[in-house]
Image (cartoon, rainbow, N blue to C red; front, side, top):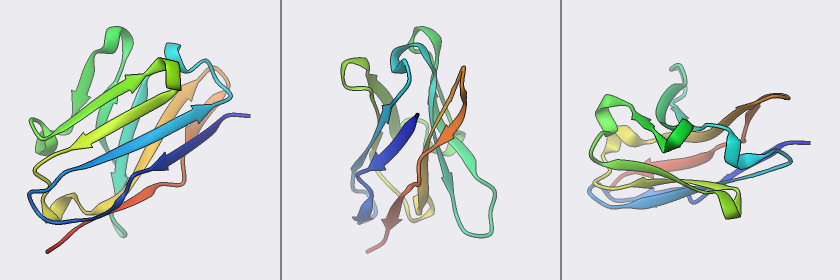
Length: 115
């Protein structure tokens, strides 16, 4: 059974930093792409960052230069380093993996950017 568990969310001031973590169990973590998405109530979920084959990365335009996605295959963990955060980054952040068995999401971790 694949499990996806996010952590690291919280309240952060504008301009501050936060690191989200996502641990995946039950799949061959190292061979699959990983993504971070976010959602605000009433809006569609959007792709924030992804890490793909050969560690190629992709970012939402509004977070380029501020957020960095990385992975540690030895720990089955993907990270999202969030720097220079803005109030518009406030959302629930979800970790996502598509593998040979299906499409898996975590329950999300809330990030609130406010002074």
